[in-house]
Amino acid sequence: MSTLRPESITVKAGRPEEPGAPLNTPIVMTAPFRHDPVDNHYARHDVTDTVQSFQTVLGALEDGQALAYSSGIAAVSCVVDTLPVGTVAVVPTGQYSGTVRIFDEAERLGRLQVRRADIADAAAVGAALPGAGLLWLETVTNPLMAVPDLPVLAAAAHRAGAIVGVDATFSTPLVVRPLDHGVDVVMHSATKYLSGHSDVLLGALVTRSAALYDTLWQRRSLAGSIPGGLETFLATRGLRTLALRMERAQANAGELALRLAAHPRVTRVRYPGLPADPGHEVAARTHLGFGAMIGIELDGTAEEAEAVCERLQLITHATSLGGVESLIERRARHEVDASFGTPDSLLRLSVGIEHVEDLWDDLLQALL
Picture (cartoon, rainbow, N blue to C red):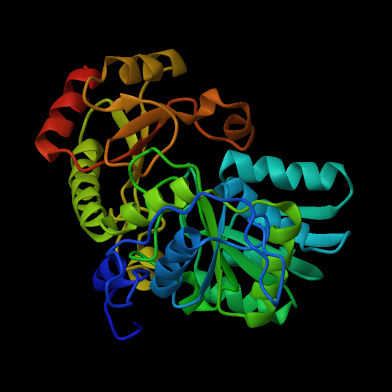
């Protein structure tokens, strides 16, 4: 399977191959299994064929071993829970709010010592690394759209004796494979682009380290955070069209970012595909694309930015991202996002696969 390109892997991997088998792995809905001579299997510990199919596809895309979880947050928690008490964790100053809460709570309970750094500033990250056991990154930060230099930071973390985890939800394996840049474990909120239809709650971790895989597998088994059969079936079905969806969404996002940057109501567009964006050079060097997420800063108040969201008709005013439909939200309305300096008028736009001219027409009428 490694000889296939990613677009073919999404279609081929994880299917039954036996003569007479169904084309798709069926949905297996069970908690207990019959005893066998080796073990007493149970769904809290052992995945069904349905879950394994998803893990196989994602593992092939990342060229690693994948573990599926009941949510992206469950996957992040699994990494944190494997760390010894007192571990120093270096994390982004601004990142996904759910991950912020996980590290904040671990710090409050005295489990971790948390150091926060601007992960787009390699020198600042390097200064925070001595004595650290974990460096946690995002391929593109949520929602401020900063882009870390993965190979540089991974090498610095390993010199300091830390493992490196990366949330690659915004990027997917089609845009960047962090494991290729020295990262130890990749996290995906499969709720988003991987499943792609806003109907699944699912997470995943992928690693190339057999020892780390075993540690994460044991922690997942203990915590019982394996997802169900229906969710993983839907996520696998979503993966089959990932390449097409990402191609269209990225093309739409690139065009919208250019047009928004010239709009008089917009003071800044945060999108690494724009040559003037601070993350452009790193993304152009280490990524295969620029993603489909855009940060739009408006000239106006928070209330005026909310009003723009409410006037949109094709683009939906809602939390989440990565589905076929375009979604928008003012992120500073959330306390965690506001706490790390998200501008009051910043709108996070997840660009979907609609016709780009219809999306632009919708934005134009809402920005009036």
